Image (cartoon, rainbow, N blue to C red; front, side):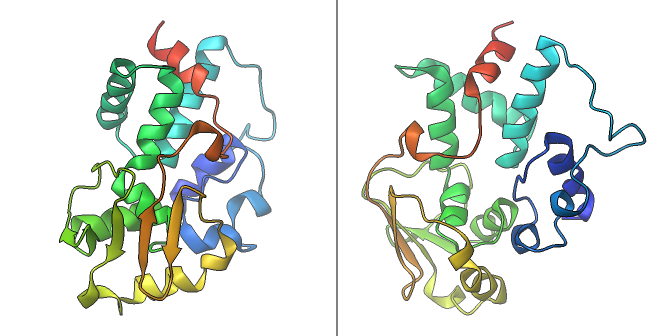
Length: 205
């Protein structure tokens, strides 16, 4: 992924952690230029209600590295579930296999995590799964396949793991490069600054 994605973080005014370990160094775009890209970047204008809702949807879509069609599909699934649609959406996105691989620290970014899943480096309950949108459930065991534990990208991600906090709904065995889904994630366990009600308002317009 090129450094061009750093423009997304500057546009939102916060770290979206799209560049993995780079985001934790002084090379991070937010650390160096915490204002929107473009010639008028230093002058933040007022936004319409529509723009605010659109930007929140775009922000979350970028956090989880999804295309519009994929994101809309998860939103529609969240609508079909009981309860709050916005909270359902965020919980579904967290349960994606690529997101869990990232959360466990096996990859330094969600994009790297997706590549690991797509290239058959990840097992769920001792079976290789190459579908990044696969939804994990309570009791599932997610791990790096035995033959792939020496991958440089995995070693690099694990070395930087101390900079990240493993969510309480996941339990990591770092020595075995294995993680267990000890409970279903709750909205309160997802601490990244997301205002999901704006996304609901965007799609309900």
